[in-house]
Length: 173
Image (cartoon, rainbow, N blue to C red):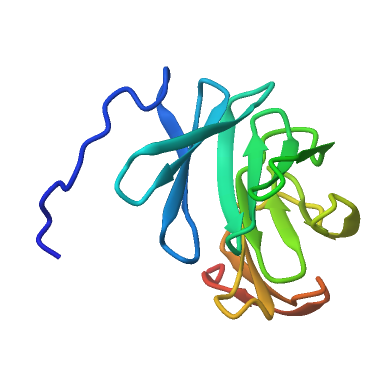
């Protein structure tokens, strides 16, 4: 890596880019914007397609393998876009902003201001994992565990959303 700009894409969206994801095969990337759109690009920076027009600004994106793109927005709507069939499933996942999305082979994990939920790839609710203020949540790299940050605590769950442990990072004096 040289740190040199390979290609600069100007005016990729009408408003600032608010979300970015890279496919697992590293051949594509997606951008989401405050202009309510999501765009799919090849690794050279050429636009493949505008995928979906959301009702709200896009706040988070995650590829699920190389077959699906999961999109969250400011209004709590989740879009599951199938890259092969070009069909989208839209569901109201949260009452407010979807702050982050993470996937493993079986589930979609979404994080809002006050809850973390687990869904299948058809958009069905599997489990509400946490109902409290959270900062972020992610599946581990191998997809077997979920780590959620809430204040100064880290919460550990198995991939099915069962709580295993919690760690307090700061002790009260």
